[in-house]
Image (cartoon, rainbow, N blue to C red; front, side, top):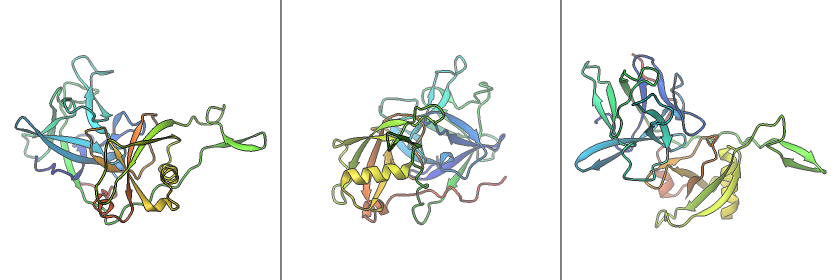
Length: 274
């Protein structure tokens, strides 16, 4: 458990494959990727204790969603690793216990509270041994990706977005629930406003939320995504996933004490070499 301190950021690397646990851009799937220098391969540690047992939960540094296991589309008797919102504290498929491998390498096998050891999807009889790599924090928040406007086409002398038109990429459209955290009282999870957002650009999302809040400068706000009603906040600095699932965004005032306490992992930190 000492490799998973609460609030820290880690990468999980398969010793055999050398690949990292990666949050797919669809916001749901998990894959193994060689690209460790990506927020999609970084996970924040959320520790809790249930009935005297200490558990590890992991939520992605990219989209804030939690590692879970589902039986859907999995070999009979086994599970498949996915990203999900942590909404129900009674759910056991979010709870993990890392058990140190007996080979003396310091690697761990991740045991799920509900479904048992994390196994290879292609070879479900094989447990996976993970190297746990600690990721240091950045000194400053990263710049957001450049804003990419949706494709526009002329119609009746007016430029409008037609994402469903043949030859144009389909754009996601989702509901954004957002609430502002005050420097004095923090965030009230019972008070939300809603807007509809088209596309995946986090820069455009910040602009739209700033406009909705009456902020003249979008740099005055910092966005965090909440990975479910029981989930912790994750600074939102990557473009949104491709799905259309509702996202909950907590807005901080840039430069406030609360915003200054946010931790941004340095995904470009030197990767572990063995």
